[in-house]
Length: 349
Image 1 (tube, one colour):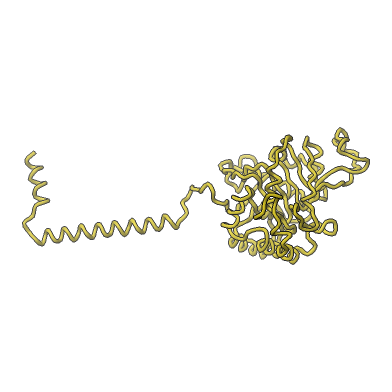
Image 2 (tube, helix red, strand yellow):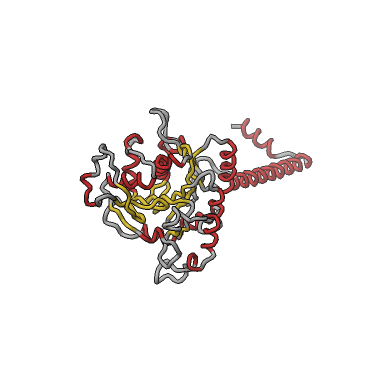
């Protein structure tokens, strides 16, 4: 159309040198501003975490887990409901700790447990094991503030919405297994105390063994008293596991449950469990009520570092290391603890 042609010609053809120069300057400035904006946007995108995106090999951050909410309240891990993606590992190790154990955690982070996220990531890649401290809550605001600072510095916790009390350890243990199962798609779930010296490489080899029984309970087994409560008739059909006065169960400082066992615990309501004063006895009683295979592994309760020891603690003197803050550091300085190979064919461990 003629009118359109004239308009197009008039906008792009001017006889004024000043007009041409100004157009060039404006174009140059526009390009410069566009380039600067793109550069700033690129930096912002690089340094700012993107919401809703999670790198597949990034170590999960500290998370708070809430359980047993009222029906319809959208319960689940961390209050996020069923949209939590379970992180895949061979084994998840929950290091049970408390508000009075900050010194133990410091010693652990100076020895076999890396103190930084990159170190934890490397350990996980090398062993297939993820490690987190497990702790509840307290009404002491000062203690909670100190915990908040530690979480911000190290970011290696799972926080349970349950009171942190010694008398409630069985409840905390059940909450731990439920939380671990919700957060991690793991073949094994390991309960470990914060006062043992652990070899993650050897623990990984133990968990990687072929097993024919899908429900497995691994620990350094001992005999404990059978309860005389007349209401406890459920253990009578399990007589092959019982002696005259005792039954097998694992020592408390460290034991392992396979995924099928933990799935069964998660499926039951809290009031379906009978709790006893001792946490390890409580777990042992639950295992007797289930069709689990008891795997007695003495390498989980060595009193000294040996070529095969997985967990070292002062058995039978203490339930753990007797002076853990000091003893952890001493053990870590021994070549027999840190330099001995994980197997006869491994010369570089």
